[in-house]
Image (tube, rainbow, N blue to C red; front, side, top):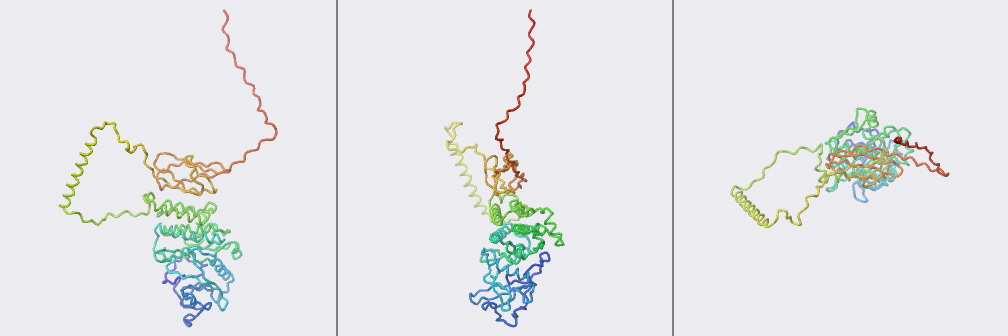
Length: 485
């Protein structure tokens, strides 16, 4: 957490499950910081101020007297009697203490106060939350992809520990500037789920913020790590478009849209980014990006694709039109310009004379042996398409040539006038074939047919093969002979 100036809370992001609010700092009601400036926690952390408070938790800024650094301390209110909240607070201590990724907020220590309230000591961040950054408008595409990439890497480590966040949203993503580098931090694993946390959640109990909840989360189904992938795709959509994909006046209407409504089209993203977001927002989680590590790889490839010259040349919908205004550079004086023209004219004349002299004595058909061949075809641009079918480990062939094994990217030539064949092949399945003639480097890949399982071949009977029935062939008719004379 970080001390920051007050900001108006966006009601769209209000969430009854927030552990800590980010409103204006208030006086320390629990530790009475105003009356006792020497208030201590854990015999080493001297409280220096209040960062924020929520319904059941408080966050203080403190000075670690042993190490000599500023920290943030999150502690439960003294009047909190909700046993579920206390269980989730202790769950957050256990979960966050295991995580070591640079994009996950670090927990240095945890314990209990004198009145047996649990607390945890965290790194004190300086910067702004992603929610505050979005209040200024959409982000550039590269910046949005880089933020999402760091979040995906943080989630990947958490998922490897059997933990998923379940409440990923812009308020829980913090952007800190360290020198000239922007570091993203994922906060608030207070309602994180996993195998060890199922006992804290009743059947049908719904957690999360409606604008970023997965369809299975809206339906109250059992969750897994893929719910975080959907939430991150919603956040990436909002970073680029300035609004989440689904947002209505009521939470229930928003949740219904996550379950039923198609994803609205994007106006400010390159097709490469749009394809990644579309994979992350699949309503059927079996067709969604299957793990956060793969999501991070796709985001890395999208960043790389946007930075290549061929992709930069592709039309991007949100690119502003170039300004016609130009600042005129000072030109040469008339005398200098006349001298330059004279020199260029003399050099041109000498070049023509040299060409005429070199051409004397050569036959019209003679050609230099090292002349470049004019038969070489110019290289064509390619459309880089992601192949990620529901079945994993599928071999992809392009025009009969093996390209890669899914999930992977293929490059299809553009502008050669050919209809290219994309074939998906896997043992035990029928081949799925789709023709494609891309018209531009940014054209989206059409939907590929699904792979269908092949029926097992029937085994031959152990007895001798049955001979095919004999069919009497018709006797050929003889032509009538000519009458004898």
